[in-house]
Length: 228
Image (cartoon, rainbow, N blue to C red):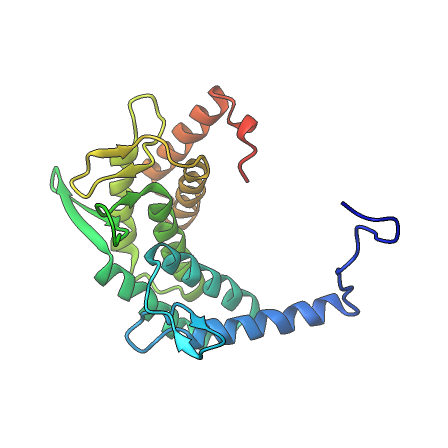
């Protein structure tokens, strides 16, 4: 609650030169994020600031979104030399924290979340971030070296779909359903990712799945969820 002397602007700093200041902050953020990628492509995940110690745990789900954010800012700043480390980070995640399956002679690529307790999980949202990050890398660099893996990740999305057109949210590593529902934004996230994939590849099968997803959302009034 605000008291009589406070306004809604308390604690808000006004930018004197928004364009210049925002660019400065973006460059600083890009520099820091790039420095956190080690030579093998794994991130330094975080620090205990007071102790000057590096965190030993690793949240694998945050890996692809971090690379995606880096590629977005590279696209803005034009510091394309930083894409070398971004590529290493993408490759490390694919090499260490994904699962390969085969179905009807089609290769499938799933993102796996390694859990300290309980069984490992395959999440729809993480699959979306894999597709988004690889699409953004190819968009920024024009390097198509991940395109095969992108299409394998797309092939895997079919295993999340129900006959109704809705997506299951979490699978076990044997591809059985663990949770039909976990959090609503997974479905918007995968639809957005597939739209980006279609923009990149113009693949008709990708477009078909995007349309099916959007039709299902419209038919079932997904606007009520206010998912961004």
